[in-house]
Amino acid sequence: MTLLEAVDVRKRYGNVVALDGVTLAVAAGEFVSIIGPNGAGKTTLVNLLSGQSAPSSGAVRFKGRDVGGVGPVRLARLGMARAFQLVHVFPALTVGETIAVAVVSRLGRGRRWLAALAHDRAVWEEVAEVAEIFGLGGALGRPARTLPQGDKKLLDVASAFALRPELILLDEPTSGVSTADKHAIMEVLVGAARRVGVKAIVQVEHDMDIVFGYSDRIVALQQGRVLADGPPASILADESVLAAVVGRPPAGAGRVR
Image (cartoon, rainbow, N blue to C red; front, top):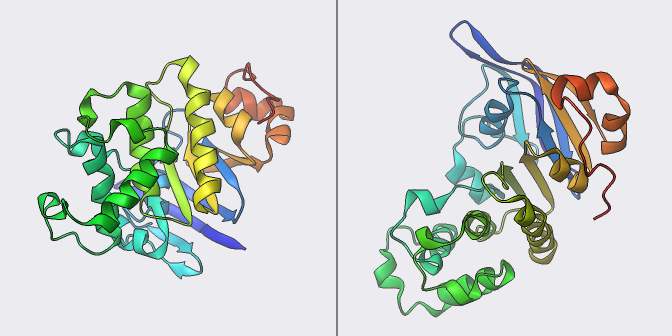
């Protein structure tokens, strides 16, 4: 079952062509990584897939519905979420309050101040459940800005998971995190996805060890076009693709998850 697809998508900014005829599809059960050198169009593509902007031409569909430019709030209601880094948006909130923002949004209670939710048992039970899944259960009252970088990343993702999406989009989920913490974060993320019923994950990630260690499929972009689309083994076997988008084979290639 195809959940998300881009069909012959193009995106122009004046005379600059950021994406030039990109077509891809994401099915239920897939973990898809989008890779490419700087300027390849990765962020532009994720912005289109997440409804933050509309394509200049072509179509973006989620569960068969055209969602080009609908915005992340409406898309979240349809079942797609993007990690939105609330730690940076609301630095004064606690870990619990940060997750609660997403829960409140999903429940349609966004017009109520968090203070008014102090006695809303349903919201806080769900906050506690999500926090526990991501190993943040003991930090609910802690200011989010004081978390270690790895835990901030987990909190960002936990907030997106609190929207209960069918598909989640992750933009550099391990950036700024120590090498020792990256695989731990990914193990938690993948385990959480299975536990809460997320059907598919799409990530943009520059760390090739993470990409080749966790992806079912890899989409390689170059100059706004799809250079390759296939399982990790086929990407590894194509030296021209590796040279264009990676530069060298990843040290952890072939890692079994």
